Image 1 (cartoon, rainbow, N blue to C red):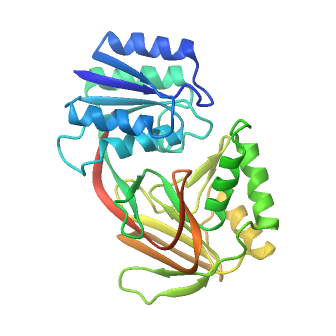
Image 2: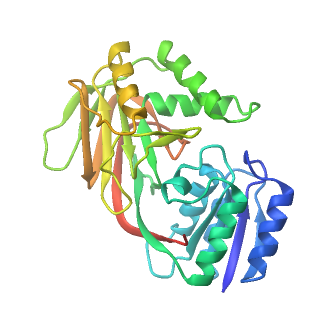
Length: 309
């Protein structure tokens, strides 16, 4: 088996020693090439080359951004049986996709599980989401995307790149964006299959699985009926008044309660979601800022990728 290990040395939980241990362990089972990223998009380029070269497995060692780049590189030519399998050894602060797949948070434990999965031939095929906007070729996402507030948070965190990304940083920025939104309160319209458009929404979150994200050890649930084997979930609010936000925050961090409320638009297992705005609004996927759009579509792609777990 031929494999490529893509390592982001700047990710929160990656170290040179950990990389060397992982590379040595993988090299004992596969013919391995190691790529250490040093610029934005490098992981995507490395994964795309691996797919063209007919590599069997690409292992991403980094955070959600590194995994997203690797996935987009693997699927640069679309979904097919020739796409290499994906392996993940978490190295970031949240590692949402990896944790949603049931992988351990600790890199050493995750590496051990990956090696066992390779030996035993264990894998699963998962559905992904795809963002298409303004005629662009699209961007794949593994766990979540969003329009409005969360994308504004991502933009602000990106501007603070001198600070180490952490749950506390995201929380502080989210509160600041809520109190003083950098782009104001945009009005969004959502169109779902077979339904009339719903207008005057203030934020739209899209999920490809549950949980939507994590804050440290705490899972954040928006669409509990969402899974890798089903369509996308949409969670949208008509109001961002404090009582509404606090109500849904309590529901989201609860281990049991469903998200519900008069100001909530929520659906699970939908094929596509179209969001429009009169003014350009920020869009993010997997915590990566895509820029500003007036029209964007989120599409569910079943059985898009095989992951070694």
